[in-house]
Length: 154
Length: 432
Image 1 (cartoon, rainbow over the protein chains, first blue to last red):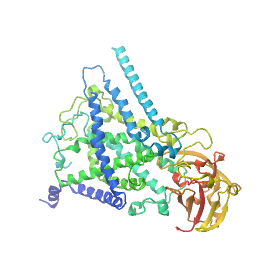
Image 2: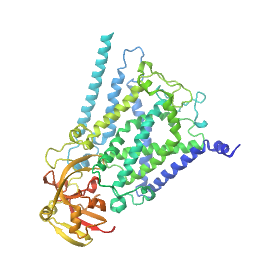
Image 3: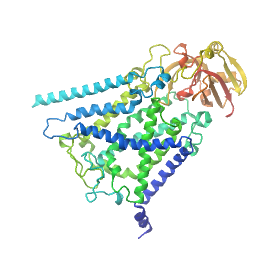
Image 4: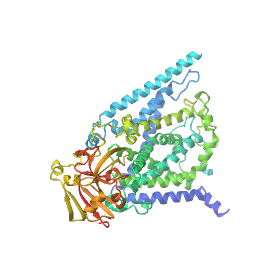
């Protein structure tokens, strides 16, 4: 067994893998050490791991469950057309906008936003609701046109 | 592909949490999302690092929120003043692109999530290390997105300094990103070749089939029948990105597009007057007292700390040679606004101070607390003919919220270096 093969057998991958990992740990580790010397190091660490955990164990299961509960994942191949995706699409984009701009829409940053910008933050909830309504209306209209066209050509 | 990662039909990728059912998961879908992220994230990283350079941190700790950065500031250079829209473009791209990549990041994580739950979790030393670096990558990307989103919406709920955490967090992410790309690039290329993009874009739901369950650990062993086509899913992800672009980009592009970005923090109109444009930190928020900005206000111009060469009233400044330029204010938060500023050139004030060739300028203001009450400007920034101590905007006196009696405007500088409520300029030959 060659030296390389022995390393491969013990490590489980080749030298390129080991080199990449070493480079990653050197760069990331150096930056992590810099964070480690700050007074706020623990907060960064908690938020760093917390971000991944929040996605994998909260956001991902949440949207998966919502998708399953609405029955959008089941498809009856004999059904005339997939109306469910006309609900999925506006719901997904509306949800995305909410996740991205939640601090403004839900007013979490309320007084700070108003102190900094001299403008009321309360407009965002209404704007998001209007946007959501518009998305569903457009999606519904497109679906209606498609069904109509399909009906005419039958 | 390393042998240990092989999970073919002999070793089904089942998790203790149940089986994965989506018929769309597979190497091709993940690879398409990956190639977009690869390009996008390189641009976001680069513009982020440029943004750090734009603060000219090498001029002194006043400009530098991470003074112990060491070698991580290896690339720093004196930020130019031309073209004047440089920082506006850089930061608009950084923030807007960062936001429109969010749906692609989420889709990519969805496409590979079965791998998070592979059983047993660790099969070899190499895999253990790689899984740790993937935590750095995923945690890092999400950390940068979340801190960025919270910062631009002024929800300062995080227990750390945004500048330090976002900067060092980016370097942790870059390290993990580079290793991931080196390791996975061949797999991504193979994935892109495993299906024809143009063929997939012509395949409707009725003809969408799950990927073959061979040598592709992402393909479900017993998939449901598809409820959306691959092109439908890609369209949904792209539609999400397009929606976020329209909801965000107007705060950078400005003009009629600003009010179209209805959810952007700065997709707002203040009115139609000369001072009706985005305010960053009102006079009240910075506790600027009206008594300090009235007729008793004086600008101290000095060449060394403690020694005043001149003390000028606002009328004295208005009597000097005034210049008018159209220049942007561009915030690190991504929004920007272009206005027409009138004021005295900083280089003329350097002559008043008796130092026509300064190496740097310390700008101080009436603001006593909080960040950016003062800033250091470089020699290039002081000597640029468009760098002004502005007294008027769009022909009218500055409003209190825009820095009355006088504020700095420097082309291509980060917004916070355009100090408001200025009361002292100290031109220096070397850092104090």
